[in-house]
Length: 272
Length: 272
Image 1 (cartoon, rainbow over the protein chains, first blue to last red):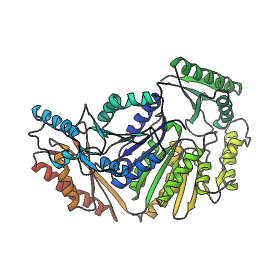
Image 2: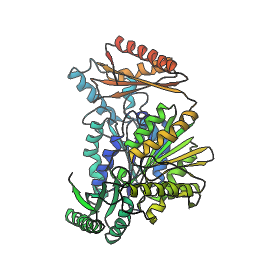
Image 3: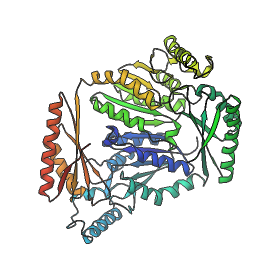
Image 4: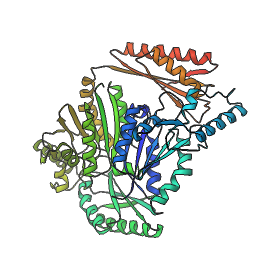
């Protein structure tokens, strides 16, 4: 199996259906575009043991990266670093550089008049309490640093749950690592609507096209119930160059379009 | 640990960041409202072994229910029933009643002129191929039936990935089972904005309020970076009656509001 990525989302708000997990969606999309495969996305609550279990289970599948989001802030229910430390069988200790990052942020907030005075309270100190061997990743948008720690062949990266902070740290520190680990490949995708042929009749045509185009992955998405008035077909591939990736998808798209038309169906490219 | 629910989403489109996992969000919200706790949400691809592993791992945590979505359709990459059968160590066989449901749907489609003729092709037959001991759940909206199978203390329910079909089968067959298993309790939630106090100063006030209101769960969500101009506090509980649930949340909400105001912060209830 090629090197893969696992995503672990932490937060009770995801388990009670208070918010949609758009962070995982965003990370999955970015990882895919960078040329690496997301194998599993796991969501657990704000609980040290649940987080620790999810980390250990993911490690057993030997991913190249584990990316967590959520649970890095100052409140009592921010438990990702404690869960991560337990999952790795390591202790937590105050990291001097992380502490400096946090102190500087609060001093700046005081200068800017956003808070009255800076006091290194226990909740604030907690954000600098990293698993042994971990490094902080500067947070250009908020206070809690991201955290990176290596364990055997896996690099574990803990990102905040606030989307703007998560994305900023991802783009600056995580994206370059993934791109390099993926061998600087290119991802390409395209979609097509099929009208007038039910999904069950399109299925064998997809099989045939994927057989003839082994690097291209095709998936059908019924829009509405069977027999579908409209079926979305999604084509994707990764290749060494954007030209090759685009060519592969085009070839498969043309072949499948012709097969569908021969069955009396209509096709329409989808612009994104 | 009280009885819990696990959700397993199946679909490569979720792992490549093509679509947001709104099905899991919807199910988590409904399960919570029905009074039961979602412990974990797992997303895996269209792969028999990945699905089978996710089922087996969830079973080890002994949930009352496992709800899967996606992968029940007729195409080659709809693999949930095969994964479920393997995860349970059971065979797959054509279920007469499921076959009847599917045949009736296609006959109706022919009558309505939606398809030309009905042919029981292999992809269509596949939707009636259930794990041994499983029962089909009629799909009032689409073609593929839902599937229910019991294993030791766990009821596993496989729902389609098309949201309208998933929701229809959930409301008709799954919601009553969960409500009963939860003991017909009531869920209540409320939210509050806090302005002018950073999250790290609100944290100990939340601790105190949760300590004094042991049935109420409170979580803070920073809106924007620390030091937050706005912090959302979410209160939730379940109780035997709607009155008790509402009363518990109100009491905690009033206490925390007073604590925040004593720190110089402002509070504002959130209308949903």
